[in-house]
Length: 431
Ligand SMILES: [Zn+2]
Image 1 (cartoon, rainbow, N blue to C red):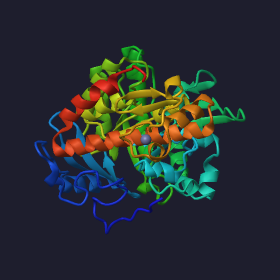
Image 2: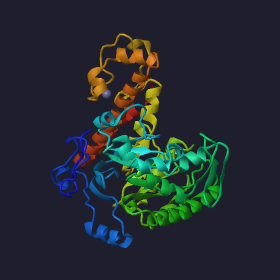
Image 3: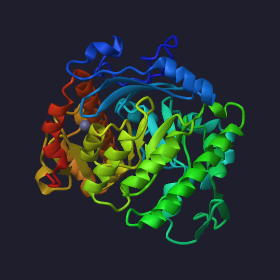
Image 4: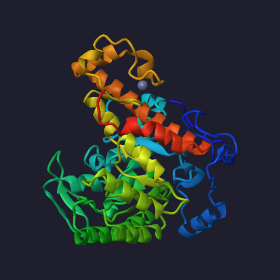
């Protein structure tokens, strides 16, 4: 894995996949042809840092398309990441058999891992004794951890939730566990992630307005407790960024109220929560766009748990910078491969003797090395290698999509790229 170097403290430096991204070494303003270009107001940023006492991450916009799509740079303690960025999900500090070198080669620079699972196994002590998640995984890139909220609220039974937090039993040994704003932050500090998330109250989108308000208000109280827990953390923990989460379900007035409350707190970034939990695509897009527009332009915006390549295209257009989703690896398990002309079901008989690569336009190691015929054979037999190879390709496809969108935003051509990609990416027809 290529080690990154903090290049003399300059902002446009490391963790960049390849120079296909725009203006890595040039002036950020050079690349805008037609796009309105905005630079982060460094003076205002320094003032904000002085006020909050934190500078765990910094964010700078490179270009903003008139439609709202943004290209930027996120500087973390492990280097600089180009945005918009897609974060594959390494649930158990493991990416479905794909190791760090392979995932790095896809262009991935940020991984997401799940606090709920890691607190149960291997537990905080193992991370503390073995030097944290980066040392354990041998991963030089950035790690973002979620808070565990989504998993805990998805548990069908055996949990009770009150103002203090969520009490539940371990699926492994039936031991009693408490996930609260404080224990979630403590666990994320033990994991040693670069970006932590606050514990929020996750509810289905079908919840009525009164129930949504109740969950939102508790989310706000928990956000303040999460900030206090970080301040009280061990030395060095202040280097870990903390993002707040805007809730409010599908109710515009609640979204506005939540964004107003959360963005007034000293978080280094803001997430749009409570989407992809039962609402339709149109409602999701509307709430995403409405919420993104309420967030400060100088901080990163993260849409949690969404989605398909088409969702990413729509959400980048709405001004979102960061994404995670299990789909690339989950679809690989079922034999599906993403391409820019649609989704391939590799188990189809028509691929049995096919000597072409999965996607002739893809430069990932799978498309450079293997035929559709071989991948068809592996998928039919549900062989572990087939799942791993399709996972590598699918992640590479997502990263290529992000790079294409970024380049288009920087060059002022995002609307035409959107028109080019949307029909195939929106199609649910399998090839
Ligand atoms: Zn490929």
